Image 1 (cartoon, each protein chain N blue to C red):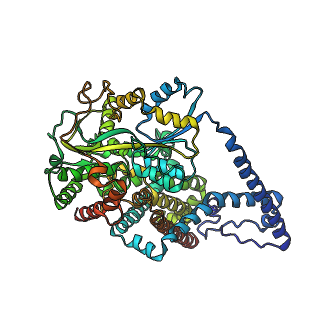
Image 2 (tube, each protein chain N blue to C red; image 1 turned 90 degrees about the vertical axis):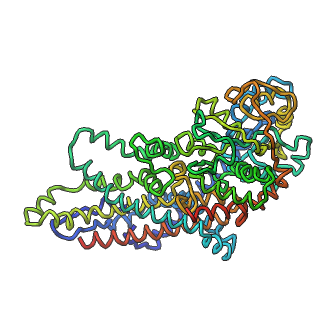
Image 3 (cartoon, rainbow over the protein chains, first blue to last red; image 1 turned 135 degrees about the vertical axis):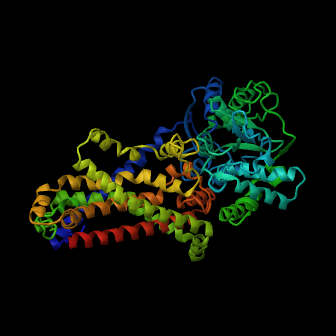
Length: 349
Length: 287
């Protein structure tokens, strides 16, 4: 790097020529790629882009769908990953016919970007394909006797919860913690006080729900805030955990949509998700069904034959927080309630 | 840094003479090497220059006030301070430990040396999240060693030290291998003490390689994410590093703010690399 080159005009020209040749070659290679990439997709392929948790459910749902008349000869190209990353990938050009995220705002991003029609949630199901609730995951046998939200902020209890700043899905957890105070008739100030204590007890704020589970099963903390379906999945995978459905908790609603230029097969697949058959597959992997009358034994649930107990008070994002856009603004934007509390608790520790 | 192998000392107890690339090779830059240069430049631009420029451009999207607002956010500032501070510490540790390990691997014969030589690269090979999990299991609440640093500052240091260990070892090792022992023996037979031999013969040839390794190690450390997230707990003002802030901003669809932090990290890395290069030149010139 330090040697000095004296370049004569002659050499300069020759180098320029070679440079031009290199540019041409690289451009040819680039355009070559561009020309062939479209041919691969056909009308019978569904590009499915989803967050990671429903992967097992989709595997059996896809198999069932392919047996129906609408799913004949359909093949799937799947992509799974963190919800926000997947949504941003589609917004950035990843080909998708069908999307399923853990959070409405990940679909809204695609509506804003023009990939998904604005009326995606206009139907009776509001675009929601599966439900869950926020639960408290504890060590096997519940050695710290944690029964609800208030036990989490007792002296010595350490909480693991994904960071609401970096994990979209973690925002369900944070709202549940906040909302349980309101559900018991508390004021907003009392709810803020609780959330402050909550974050004071949070010893670890991993980047995503999956990381949080890994951190917890790796030995961190006494309680993990998670989703019921994640807890059930962990137990299906023989993790040594129990979980508690608090008396006051928040309904988690996971949206799905098809893109504007989706194949007809993708639309049929979305419709198929609301059949009892498909809902049953969601149920088996721990999700609460969005269609009435779907029952199945759920391995890993506290009570496999009655897997989804109804909490005394079930908050909803629509009914108790005014919907996601309002909740996002009030709680999670720069300078809103949650970042402010996180900042304050971080400073005092 | 490409010159690490061409800085071997040629004179005993004299100045380390840099082997300048003979001018002939410049004059003889034929079509082949011209093409290579062109291709390298394009490749480098596509992979590095253009994406980096895009990051910087993105950072300016929020305007000066947006830039300032992001930077003066106390939580971001704390994360940046922690990241740069711990990275500097870890780099300093690597300079000492990495050189020592390289020395031991090259100069000492002991059982298991070959295995150690292979194992050094493991931190490179492990996906960082796996590294994080391993660290959590070893140095977390369930540590079989009885060492629990989870969710505290030392966790950041430990994780960074783990992933950056190979850099200095791997840059220093080949130089040590090439180092002619006759030169050292000649130095001592001419009356140079061990210290003088080290300072005037070994060190000048070693420093460029160590500096190169240190630069790599620092650059890697300030951008680390995966290996940290499980062990450090990402607690704001405490163990939250800059990359976690970046991911937070991205998740909040605030790309401009994310790019501001990324640009700051770029500038810091650049400054440190330049400073290391200056130190390296001074030391190897002084001999």
